[in-house]
Length: 487
Image (cartoon, rainbow, N blue to C red; front, top):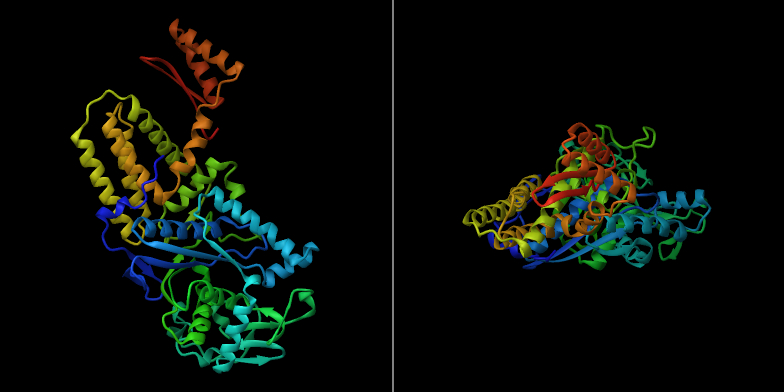
């Protein structure tokens, strides 16, 4: 399909985004006109990404696409955490080097992003930015915001005014830290001085760097803030991630970056994806409900159906993934792809006359789509506008001109939702795969029975074909058959 990035901005109102820092919607403004610096907390590559992780990256992808459609030049950076507690433990248990261990899971992650049609960001690796992390830790030590203890370096949270504001810690009057926490991840009740640089321990094996800070490795939190400053600057426009990263990770990023530079705010807009649960339960190994993309999508078309399931829900609304989520997404995507296929045929073959009503309807759909997206990426409302156009494509016939109008709008919308252009080749291959000799023979029997008015026999043969994933119908032009793309 023809890409038409940017045409939607004709009717665009000011974009308003929910900012986690303020807890409300704000009119989006970048530091530099028409440019966006955007950072996404990427995966810790110690295991396969689960669908909750992927939902966060899909939300960021939709934001990036809409910013681009609104006329912004977006520089999007995503980190790869390839050294931390989990990766070191995983490599040790697998009997592999850290690099070999993390490379495997990074490759699997990138494959998932490709299957989900996520626009590729600039990937940056923790292990390739150690120098920047060391420099930031040294700066924090020099400013008195950090201290050394037993070969490690810790951030003194009581020395940083406003620590925890992003997570609302100041509202509960958190007491000054009396202890230190060495773990990378912890909850709000354990808000203590956190580790910036971890002195080498025996369990770290060969994972360490010899630096002015001593022999060791960076803490998880300093990795992101240092890489942001190195690759995007001291202050950025947008930082995205999952809601469970607000504390401690993003909270600590703010303290580190602003502690080093003295510039506030470190991030203009904090953008967080709501939680994804499975059958109303948090994903957990002990429950056995941790789902990877391969668990819910057996092929490329189903991967795009999963994308639709996520991007057509509002990013801030907690999403409960059930056994009905994929069937519903498949039905919606199948309908959308069928409409796109019909439109392309009509653009060349239709003999119908143009209708002024179609132009009016598409104009309304385009305005509704833009208004929805500008309202904190209201993708459910934007999806409704898409299906207003799909209904036009489902009419018995459209003129060439009207088909082109509908098709152009769907292409514009798809530049944001990212499912039609990517999915149409797979859908066509699935629905139009040639019949086998056995299937062709059954179809011929159905035609003979129908022509001879042996309706019970014809109905039974139709059911048999349906069981094989083949839908048949009689039209004035003859028998038409189509495979079920999901069978």
